[in-house]
Image (cartoon, rainbow, N blue to C red):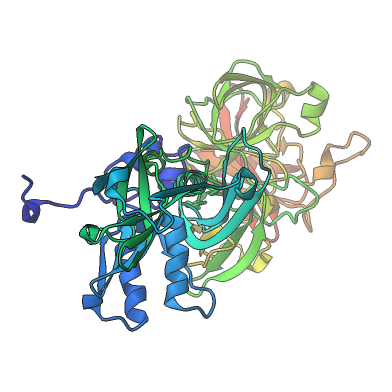
Length: 597
């Protein structure tokens, strides 16, 4: 015997119902729920007995006059959608669950159909009528019965969507279809079982019997089941009505207990959509040289990746940690990844055929391009160095070597003046962003450059305070306004000279996108004025700074003597650093060269 006070209910699952068990693509043990030990999704149901008792009490019956001990089953949900009597509500439940209400000794008893027989009677046990017949058996016409029975219910295992269940007999001489709508929530497979039971009841119950019993059979009540021996066989009948007089007039219908022990129908696949939970997106803010004429040069870029993608990302900023203001929104998911291995420096201004860039992408693909497309800007990626700077790399060949992993070769390094950002090496795990139209430009003013901002980036449909927002600090520096480093610094040893004045010459570069056009005689000046600083170095110390407004500067013999004690001559070296100046941001990216004499 089980000691009930020591029993415990088991088990409540933390997974949300009805998504568990319906979403078997997420939880593979979902089918076990139907016959398993889970309380999840079941404790919200009410017993049929409790519901019927409640309806009787609403009708004004005293609780002592109600007996629902003969009912079993659970009701997941029941709707009284109109003004109706409790009797009407109970009748609906009785048709659906298959039970009867009878009055015995002043008490209304509710009992399920399908019970076992309480007595076995023979023809000799019956009382003959005045016409001399003790037993009359009637069989209904098949054409009066339904071939199919259709029920409409609400799905208790979903969002109370309508579900249609059907029971049908195949080889019968009728084509009638009966239908009914029940205002209750129930799993479709259970509704199908009850629908089959109701159809079997109709067909089995088409055989009805009328007979009389002597007063000695006073113990039999309506809804009791008897076994009646007739024509050499015993048939079960359920008493429908009893009329007491000099003999008890009985009306009964045939019953087959197998109709009340049916298996449930096949589980139906759920139409529930998987709940979309937006996590914190992976957000990268990039201060890069201008890569498109469509965006102002001073504006940084933002890339975001999330799975699932929320559709639209909102970008908020604040100078403090509160009062965030919406800056912009965008709706494209960027291709973001990480370096699988260290990425070492390589040559610029020509193909780097010695290094390979191996990238693990979170999503998206890469493909090889022709040299013509490559020179047109295709397959551009930003690779993060240890100091937070970004090198722009282009790749001509892309090879998928593992799921989500690409090996990129035939590289163009340090594009758009980012040769200074080459990591030595860029370590494995460093971020990589594919530069394409999925990146959004942050619409900030030039006055915002250099100011530290706090940013929150996340699903636009959520509040800025939601946990799905990423928080980060970022100070836009206006990298797109920084002049590129000068190139082609002339070496003194290439021309014969004697110690004395030294003219240092170089070639200017332009950050303007149009500067790559071959038709131009001279690249355009992207600054308001042309000016340079040339630093004379002694190790890490700056000996002297020479200003210039052209692409050359004179380092006089007197200055050399003041700096080094004598003019520089053959076999000596001179370390210099050259900056082009911006009237907005000051010095640009330097080029450092050691001059050989």
